[in-house]
Image (cartoon, rainbow, N blue to C red; front, side):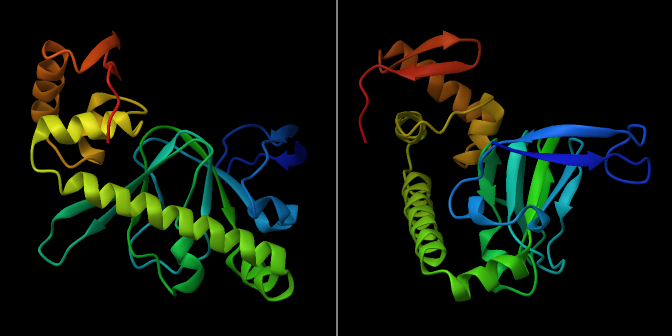
Length: 218
């Protein structure tokens, strides 16, 4: 792991005295682990604060060191659509590399520490490092597969079947409320489906708000 010396100032995101602290930086996923320290900008968000707003200038993708971020897009009709939920150790907003503006809002779902990678540093590295470029392409390809699977889940009409498929894919990583939003169901419908799936012997409740599939299937 790398280490970074950071000064905390009252006027900045952090509200501690101007004393030097040593922060242990966890390894970033490839290829972002190849970026220099000066291309990685650390900051924190309180729950409900925004990393960026829809139509803000795109300055680069983000890494969630701790906490979580939800990506929302507002349609012309005024509806809010959840595009993605990024948890600790995940990256998000990679599409900003090839866009002038962010196409959604990035809002903290709880108190979070984020890292923004400089767009210009990544694009420059793409031009000069074939290994870096290949790793980034592989990452994007994997994400496309994940997004396609998510669309498949949303196309499942029955609530019980959708909830079971999502549990089998390991998509419940936090609360039932967050799980419901991620799979496009109301929390009432999700709770009802979970109750029925437990009754039918398809899943079991392992702790409060947490469930395990007994006969995993896709």
